Length: 331
Image (cartoon, rainbow, N blue to C red; front, side):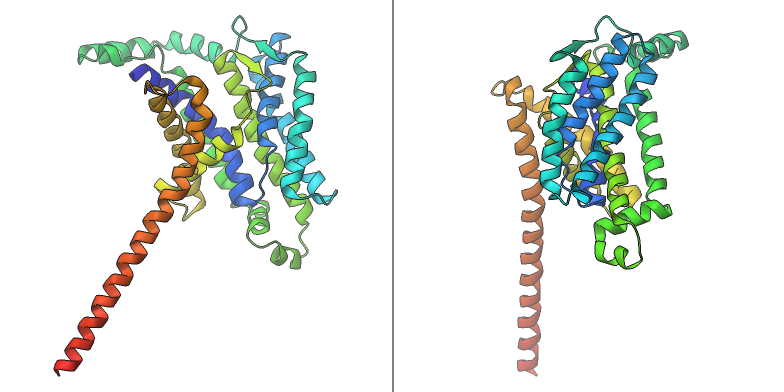
Protein backbone atom coordinates (compact mmCIF):
# COMPACT_ATOMS: atom_id res chain seq x y z
CA UNK A 1 0.00 0.00 0.00
CA UNK A 2 2.72 2.45 1.01
CA UNK A 3 4.75 1.64 -2.13
CA UNK A 4 1.73 2.37 -4.35
CA UNK A 5 1.05 5.68 -2.58
CA UNK A 6 4.72 6.65 -2.75
CA UNK A 7 4.68 5.96 -6.51
CA UNK A 8 1.58 8.17 -6.77
CA UNK A 9 3.46 11.02 -5.10
CA UNK A 10 6.31 10.58 -7.60
CA UNK A 11 4.00 10.65 -10.62
CA UNK A 12 1.92 13.43 -9.03
CA UNK A 13 4.95 15.70 -8.84
CA UNK A 14 5.70 15.05 -12.53
CA UNK A 15 2.07 15.69 -13.52
CA UNK A 16 2.18 18.89 -11.45
CA UNK A 17 4.33 20.44 -14.19
CA UNK A 18 1.53 19.70 -16.67
CA UNK A 19 -1.04 21.07 -14.21
CA UNK A 20 0.90 24.36 -14.01
CA UNK A 21 0.64 24.58 -17.80
CA UNK A 22 -3.12 23.99 -17.65
CA UNK A 23 -3.41 26.62 -14.91
CA UNK A 24 -1.58 29.09 -17.13
CA UNK A 25 -4.00 28.65 -20.04
CA UNK A 26 -7.31 28.13 -18.19
CA UNK A 27 -6.94 30.42 -15.20
CA UNK A 28 -4.44 33.08 -16.30
CA UNK A 29 -5.36 33.41 -19.99
CA UNK A 30 -8.96 32.22 -19.59
CA UNK A 31 -8.40 30.10 -22.71
CA UNK A 32 -9.96 26.58 -22.94
CA UNK A 33 -6.91 25.01 -24.58
CA UNK A 34 -7.46 21.38 -25.61
CA UNK A 35 -4.04 21.28 -27.28
CA UNK A 36 -2.84 19.76 -24.00
CA UNK A 37 -3.96 16.25 -24.99
CA UNK A 38 -1.70 16.46 -28.05
CA UNK A 39 1.27 18.47 -26.77
CA UNK A 40 1.68 16.12 -23.79
CA UNK A 41 2.28 13.25 -26.22
CA UNK A 42 4.47 15.47 -28.40
CA UNK A 43 6.84 16.03 -25.48
CA UNK A 44 6.90 12.30 -24.76
CA UNK A 45 7.41 11.38 -28.44
CA UNK A 46 10.20 13.87 -29.10
CA UNK A 47 12.16 12.93 -25.98
CA UNK A 48 11.70 9.17 -26.56
CA UNK A 49 12.82 9.27 -30.20
CA UNK A 50 15.84 11.45 -29.41
CA UNK A 51 16.90 9.19 -26.52
CA UNK A 52 16.57 6.07 -28.69
CA UNK A 53 18.79 7.79 -31.26
CA UNK A 54 21.54 8.42 -28.73
CA UNK A 55 20.81 12.01 -27.64
CA UNK A 56 21.53 12.88 -23.99
CA UNK A 57 18.21 12.49 -22.08
CA UNK A 58 18.55 15.92 -20.44
CA UNK A 59 19.02 17.55 -23.84
CA UNK A 60 16.15 15.50 -25.29
CA UNK A 61 13.85 16.68 -22.48
CA UNK A 62 14.73 20.34 -23.09
CA UNK A 63 14.10 19.93 -26.83
CA UNK A 64 10.68 18.42 -25.97
CA UNK A 65 9.94 21.60 -23.99
CA UNK A 66 10.80 23.77 -27.00
CA UNK A 67 8.65 21.67 -29.35
CA UNK A 68 5.73 22.00 -26.90
CA UNK A 69 6.21 25.77 -26.97
CA UNK A 70 5.93 25.73 -30.77
CA UNK A 71 2.73 23.63 -30.58
CA UNK A 72 1.17 26.14 -28.19
CA UNK A 73 2.20 29.04 -30.43
CA UNK A 74 0.48 27.34 -33.38
CA UNK A 75 -2.76 27.16 -31.38
CA UNK A 76 -2.37 30.84 -30.56
CA UNK A 77 -1.83 31.68 -34.24
CA UNK A 78 -4.93 29.73 -35.27
CA UNK A 79 -6.98 31.69 -32.77
CA UNK A 80 -5.50 35.17 -33.18
CA UNK A 81 -4.52 35.31 -36.86
CA UNK A 82 -7.01 32.76 -38.17
CA UNK A 83 -9.88 34.19 -36.10
CA UNK A 84 -10.87 30.67 -35.02
CA UNK A 85 -12.85 30.07 -31.84
CA UNK A 86 -10.51 29.31 -28.86
CA UNK A 87 -12.08 25.91 -28.19
CA UNK A 88 -12.06 24.93 -31.85
CA UNK A 89 -8.46 26.07 -32.39
CA UNK A 90 -7.33 23.82 -29.53
CA UNK A 91 -9.31 20.87 -30.92
CA UNK A 92 -7.85 21.37 -34.40
CA UNK A 93 -4.30 21.48 -33.07
CA UNK A 94 -4.92 18.45 -30.86
CA UNK A 95 -6.12 16.45 -33.89
CA UNK A 96 -3.19 17.62 -36.00
CA UNK A 97 -0.72 16.68 -33.27
CA UNK A 98 -2.02 13.11 -33.21
CA UNK A 99 -0.74 12.56 -36.75
CA UNK A 100 2.40 14.60 -36.09
CA UNK A 101 3.18 12.48 -33.03
CA UNK A 102 2.79 9.29 -35.08
CA UNK A 103 5.18 10.76 -37.67
CA UNK A 104 7.71 11.62 -34.96
CA UNK A 105 7.65 8.16 -33.39
CA UNK A 106 7.24 6.21 -36.63
CA UNK A 107 4.96 3.79 -34.74
CA UNK A 108 2.37 3.91 -31.99
CA UNK A 109 4.75 3.00 -29.14
CA UNK A 110 8.44 3.66 -28.43
CA UNK A 111 9.91 1.63 -25.51
CA UNK A 112 12.62 3.14 -23.31
CA UNK A 113 13.25 0.28 -20.87
CA UNK A 114 16.71 -0.46 -22.27
CA UNK A 115 17.69 3.21 -22.72
CA UNK A 116 19.41 5.73 -20.49
CA UNK A 117 16.85 8.22 -19.20
CA UNK A 118 16.92 11.25 -16.93
CA UNK A 119 15.79 9.09 -14.01
CA UNK A 120 18.30 6.29 -14.60
CA UNK A 121 21.14 8.81 -14.72
CA UNK A 122 19.83 10.56 -11.62
CA UNK A 123 19.59 7.21 -9.81
CA UNK A 124 23.17 6.38 -10.76
CA UNK A 125 24.45 9.64 -9.32
CA UNK A 126 22.11 9.37 -6.34
CA UNK A 127 23.44 5.93 -5.37
CA UNK A 128 26.97 7.31 -5.22
CA UNK A 129 25.85 9.75 -2.52
CA UNK A 130 24.62 6.90 -0.31
CA UNK A 131 21.49 8.80 0.78
CA UNK A 132 19.11 5.90 0.09
CA UNK A 133 21.18 3.52 2.24
CA UNK A 134 21.21 6.00 5.12
CA UNK A 135 17.45 6.60 4.91
CA UNK A 136 16.73 2.87 4.71
CA UNK A 137 18.85 2.24 7.79
CA UNK A 138 17.02 5.02 9.65
CA UNK A 139 13.57 3.59 8.78
CA UNK A 140 14.64 0.05 9.71
CA UNK A 141 16.04 1.23 13.04
CA UNK A 142 12.62 2.64 14.05
CA UNK A 143 10.78 -0.50 12.89
CA UNK A 144 9.38 0.76 9.58
CA UNK A 145 10.95 -1.78 7.23
CA UNK A 146 7.82 -2.04 5.05
CA UNK A 147 7.68 1.73 4.53
CA UNK A 148 11.04 2.10 2.84
CA UNK A 149 10.84 2.90 -0.92
CA UNK A 150 13.54 1.62 -3.26
CA UNK A 151 14.86 5.12 -3.88
CA UNK A 152 14.08 8.71 -2.93
CA UNK A 153 15.85 10.11 -6.00
CA UNK A 154 12.70 10.77 -8.05
CA UNK A 155 10.72 12.44 -5.26
CA UNK A 156 13.52 14.71 -4.06
CA UNK A 157 14.68 15.62 -7.58
CA UNK A 158 11.14 16.38 -8.77
CA UNK A 159 10.41 18.38 -5.61
CA UNK A 160 13.42 20.57 -6.31
CA UNK A 161 12.54 20.91 -10.02
CA UNK A 162 8.84 21.65 -9.48
CA UNK A 163 9.52 24.35 -6.90
CA UNK A 164 12.19 25.93 -9.09
CA UNK A 165 9.65 26.00 -11.93
CA UNK A 166 6.98 27.35 -9.58
CA UNK A 167 9.32 30.14 -8.46
CA UNK A 168 10.18 31.01 -12.07
CA UNK A 169 6.49 31.03 -13.05
CA UNK A 170 5.59 33.20 -10.05
CA UNK A 171 8.40 35.60 -10.93
CA UNK A 172 7.43 35.68 -14.61
CA UNK A 173 3.78 36.46 -13.84
CA UNK A 174 4.91 39.48 -11.81
CA UNK A 175 7.06 40.91 -14.62
CA UNK A 176 5.71 43.45 -17.11
CA UNK A 177 5.08 40.75 -19.73
CA UNK A 178 3.51 38.42 -17.16
CA UNK A 179 1.21 41.14 -15.85
CA UNK A 180 0.16 41.92 -19.42
CA UNK A 181 -0.69 38.23 -20.02
CA UNK A 182 -2.71 38.18 -16.80
CA UNK A 183 -4.51 41.34 -17.91
CA UNK A 184 -5.48 39.67 -21.21
CA UNK A 185 -7.20 36.91 -19.28
CA UNK A 186 -8.89 39.32 -16.86
CA UNK A 187 -10.03 42.07 -19.22
CA UNK A 188 -8.87 42.00 -22.83
CA UNK A 189 -10.64 45.26 -23.74
CA UNK A 190 -8.80 47.12 -20.99
CA UNK A 191 -5.34 45.91 -22.02
CA UNK A 192 -6.18 46.66 -25.67
CA UNK A 193 -6.94 50.27 -24.71
CA UNK A 194 -3.32 50.55 -23.54
CA UNK A 195 -2.15 49.65 -27.08
CA UNK A 196 -0.86 46.23 -25.98
CA UNK A 197 -0.43 43.52 -28.61
CA UNK A 198 -2.99 41.07 -27.22
CA UNK A 199 -2.44 38.60 -30.08
CA UNK A 200 1.24 38.26 -29.26
CA UNK A 201 0.50 37.98 -25.53
CA UNK A 202 -1.95 35.12 -26.16
CA UNK A 203 0.53 33.32 -28.43
CA UNK A 204 3.32 33.60 -25.85
CA UNK A 205 1.02 32.52 -23.02
CA UNK A 206 -0.23 29.46 -24.89
CA UNK A 207 3.33 28.64 -25.94
CA UNK A 208 4.53 28.67 -22.33
CA UNK A 209 1.51 26.62 -21.22
CA UNK A 210 2.13 23.85 -23.74
CA UNK A 211 5.89 23.98 -23.14
CA UNK A 212 5.21 22.97 -19.52
CA UNK A 213 2.77 20.28 -20.67
CA UNK A 214 5.29 18.80 -23.15
CA UNK A 215 8.02 19.00 -20.49
CA UNK A 216 5.83 16.91 -18.19
CA UNK A 217 5.09 14.47 -21.03
CA UNK A 218 8.83 13.96 -21.62
CA UNK A 219 9.37 13.13 -17.94
CA UNK A 220 6.35 10.79 -17.80
CA UNK A 221 7.60 8.87 -20.86
CA UNK A 222 10.99 8.35 -19.19
CA UNK A 223 9.39 7.55 -15.83
CA UNK A 224 7.03 4.92 -17.31
CA UNK A 225 9.63 3.59 -19.75
CA UNK A 226 7.71 4.20 -22.97
CA UNK A 227 6.01 6.78 -25.17
CA UNK A 228 2.58 5.93 -26.57
CA UNK A 229 0.44 7.86 -29.04
CA UNK A 230 -2.62 7.43 -26.79
CA UNK A 231 -1.05 8.46 -23.49
CA UNK A 232 -2.39 12.02 -23.74
CA UNK A 233 -6.09 11.12 -23.91
CA UNK A 234 -7.96 12.88 -21.10
CA UNK A 235 -4.87 14.77 -19.98
CA UNK A 236 -6.75 18.08 -19.98
CA UNK A 237 -9.25 16.62 -17.50
CA UNK A 238 -6.42 15.45 -15.23
CA UNK A 239 -4.90 18.93 -15.37
CA UNK A 240 -8.24 20.56 -14.56
CA UNK A 241 -8.83 18.10 -11.71
CA UNK A 242 -5.46 19.05 -10.22
CA UNK A 243 -6.21 22.77 -10.53
CA UNK A 244 -9.74 22.51 -9.10
CA UNK A 245 -8.79 20.24 -6.18
CA UNK A 246 -5.83 22.45 -5.27
CA UNK A 247 -7.88 25.66 -5.46
CA UNK A 248 -10.64 24.14 -3.31
CA UNK A 249 -8.17 23.10 -0.59
CA UNK A 250 -5.60 25.90 -0.63
CA UNK A 251 -7.30 28.89 -2.27
CA UNK A 252 -6.25 31.39 -4.93
CA UNK A 253 -5.84 34.74 -3.20
CA UNK A 254 -2.36 35.28 -4.68
CA UNK A 255 -0.38 33.85 -7.59
CA UNK A 256 2.10 32.25 -5.18
CA UNK A 257 -0.73 30.55 -3.34
CA UNK A 258 -2.47 29.50 -6.55
CA UNK A 259 0.61 27.79 -8.01
CA UNK A 260 1.31 25.90 -4.78
CA UNK A 261 -2.36 24.87 -4.81
CA UNK A 262 -1.96 23.40 -8.30
CA UNK A 263 1.07 21.35 -7.20
CA UNK A 264 -0.71 20.04 -4.11
CA UNK A 265 -3.82 19.31 -6.18
CA UNK A 266 -1.82 17.22 -8.67
CA UNK A 267 -0.32 15.07 -5.91
CA UNK A 268 -3.67 14.65 -4.11
CA UNK A 269 -5.35 13.69 -7.38
CA UNK A 270 -2.84 10.89 -7.98
CA UNK A 271 -3.25 9.69 -4.38
CA UNK A 272 -7.06 9.61 -4.74
CA UNK A 273 -6.78 7.60 -7.97
CA UNK A 274 -4.30 5.18 -6.37
CA UNK A 275 -6.56 4.61 -3.38
CA UNK A 276 -9.65 4.23 -5.59
CA UNK A 277 -7.92 1.57 -7.69
CA UNK A 278 -7.17 -0.35 -4.49
CA UNK A 279 -10.93 -0.96 -4.12
CA UNK A 280 -11.84 -4.35 -5.59
CA UNK A 281 -14.84 -2.91 -7.43
CA UNK A 282 -12.67 -0.71 -9.67
CA UNK A 283 -10.44 -1.92 -12.50
CA UNK A 284 -7.52 -0.22 -14.29
CA UNK A 285 -9.85 0.64 -17.18
CA UNK A 286 -12.04 2.66 -14.80
CA UNK A 287 -9.36 5.31 -14.35
CA UNK A 288 -11.09 7.78 -16.69
CA UNK A 289 -14.38 7.26 -14.84
CA UNK A 290 -12.63 7.87 -11.53
CA UNK A 291 -11.08 11.05 -12.95
CA UNK A 292 -14.47 12.30 -14.16
CA UNK A 293 -16.01 11.59 -10.75
CA UNK A 294 -13.18 13.43 -8.98
CA UNK A 295 -13.64 16.49 -11.21
CA UNK A 296 -17.42 16.44 -10.76
CA UNK A 297 -17.01 16.15 -7.00
CA UNK A 298 -14.42 18.95 -6.91
CA UNK A 299 -16.81 21.21 -8.87
CA UNK A 300 -20.08 20.35 -7.15
CA UNK A 301 -19.06 19.90 -3.48
CA UNK A 302 -17.65 23.47 -3.01
CA UNK A 303 -20.89 24.86 -4.50
CA UNK A 304 -23.01 22.81 -2.09
CA UNK A 305 -20.86 23.96 0.83
CA UNK A 306 -21.25 27.61 -0.26
CA UNK A 307 -25.03 27.17 -0.55
CA UNK A 308 -25.19 25.73 2.97
CA UNK A 309 -23.15 28.67 4.28
CA UNK A 310 -25.50 31.12 2.55
CA UNK A 311 -28.55 29.37 4.05
CA UNK A 312 -27.02 29.57 7.52
CA UNK A 313 -26.25 33.27 7.08
CA UNK A 314 -29.81 33.97 5.89
CA UNK A 315 -31.32 32.02 8.78
CA UNK A 316 -29.13 33.93 11.27
CA UNK A 317 -30.20 37.24 9.71
CA UNK A 318 -33.86 36.23 9.98
CA UNK A 319 -33.44 35.25 13.63
CA UNK A 320 -31.69 38.54 14.37
CA UNK A 321 -34.44 40.41 12.53
CA UNK A 322 -37.15 38.61 14.50
CA UNK A 323 -35.24 39.25 17.74
CA UNK A 324 -34.90 42.97 16.99
CA UNK A 325 -38.61 43.23 16.02
CA UNK A 326 -39.64 41.45 19.25
CA UNK A 327 -37.47 43.75 21.35
CA UNK A 328 -38.98 46.86 19.70
CA UNK A 329 -42.50 45.50 20.25
CA UNK A 330 -41.80 44.91 23.96
CA UNK A 331 -40.48 48.45 24.31
